[in-house]
Length: 125
Image (tube, rainbow, N blue to C red; front, side, top):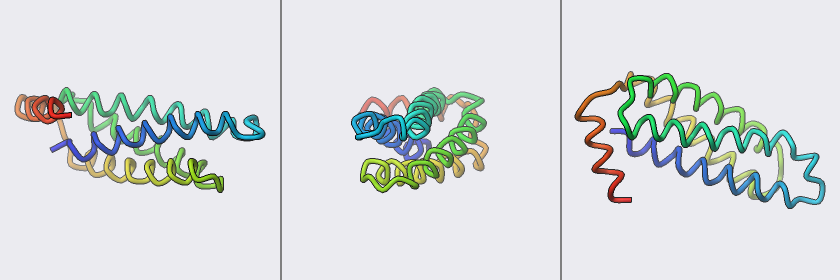
């Protein structure tokens, strides 16, 4: 049930990490400070949301809602920059925001079957 959202969160976290790293190598990294800061925050929140879903936490829906808002902010910032790493990050953030909103709207909660299902799915990775 959570697999596509967890995958989107993991993909977004990686894209944000790559974007932040690439921004630091830009000619004027100070100009990219807001992008880098949002990338770092977004990556951290995406990883946290993925963990909450994997564990079937009762608070996963609320965290996914926050994650969607964070991804929207990061996508907006990255989308303003022409560099490919920023554009790739913005796309990953948009996908993650959509998936997180969908999962939050579904009212996912903790449950033995949800948590067990994800443990089995995650073991395959």
